[in-house]
Image (cartoon, rainbow, N blue to C red; front, top):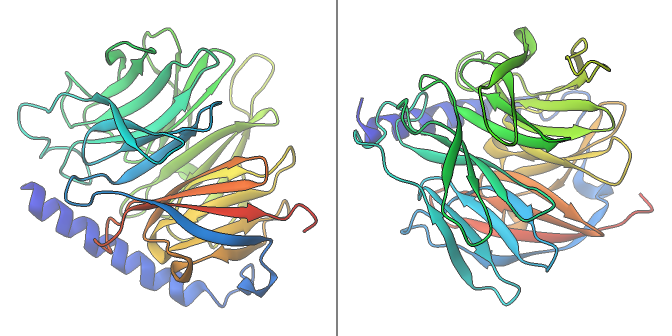
Length: 324
């Protein structure tokens, strides 16, 4: 299957899901943007579409700079405080061009996290056994693969907690786990809650308040898995629904409020602990297929990859009002 054909399949799948999401917008659980707890939304960075600078995931550095995975460019980059884009690493291209990358047909860098020492961990999907896996970039170093992952899967979401990396596979519908030092990845959780129903299943991933939280793009859900004392996964519980096309997400404060990117409808949703949600950002604010959310203090950062709009991959910021 050619890369061009695979991208057309992606566009068609997203367009279909977008229609589904639009029809669901009037269902219980959605609310008007008039009650938004965000303000001062603005695009702070525009990225180079021709250079395939499509931001898939985001990490906030202590010095105020921002690290991004540019998925289609196979790069990890940093946006400095003065707005300059600096490439930190470029991943090797697969010998076949990545045409066998599951679901998409092109190689891409996805999940991205940072440890306390500045080391970046990220996921690379190529459809080939020699490159697909978990990669590490130490400060001033070069990228190295520290764990292989199945070539017929699509590693997507990534989280780091207590020296362990948790990884979603959007094609196989599982969560894997591997030590941050590298080694063999093992399945930590699976089941119907993580499975795709036509395109991609388990997607975004966070460890928060003693549990692993996962979004399912096809099912439009947020699922919570408590981490038992022995480290195994507790029973899955669906915490939010009717979020078609949900990608990555972030928690607001110490509680269980979530800001989630809805890739297919160009929106960000605020999900309350009871599972209800409100649309708080939209295409009117400049979102174009948003992929990830990060929160620092009273500022929210949202990356848009423009996978389908094919116009303006960007970074948006907005102010959070904590009194809501």
